[in-house]
Image (cartoon, rainbow, N blue to C red; front, side, top):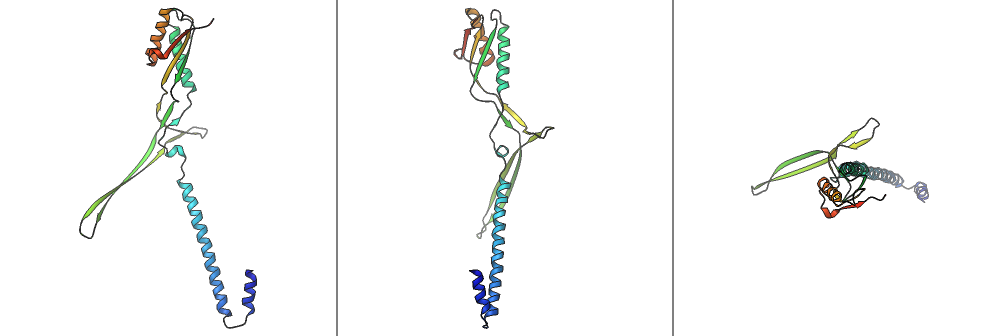
Length: 201
């Protein structure tokens, strides 16, 4: 369709032929510039979006979840070892329940920028405008194999909610009372949250 119109224009031999060719050339140049400008703006937006998209863990002020299986097992093992050394307890197994998983608060590199601007109006009055901007980035450490892990500022241990203990000597009232007191001292649990049972043979 466009080529047919061009043929019609070029087939005419009137005095406006040169003028029409110039107009077409100007139109093509403007069209090319417009396409290049749109392409540049489109790619510029995508580039700025991708540069502003930082991994969630780096910008987030939230805590980082860490594996806690070993933490749970270690606490239960320590408590079982202590209880087994109490006279009359014998073999013992411990189960602790927790309110949440262990969380780690990463260390941040914070850049704080502040600026004060004095603005004056036409009547001679002035005011000071203070602006502050801060950026937070998680600090990472890299091991020999290239894996990155956030540097930990502090670890929030899970809170113990209850304890179930099975022991060989739990049928003895004094032994049972000693187990409850020991678990209460070690965990800070109230006595009603500590359940002690005789271990099956």
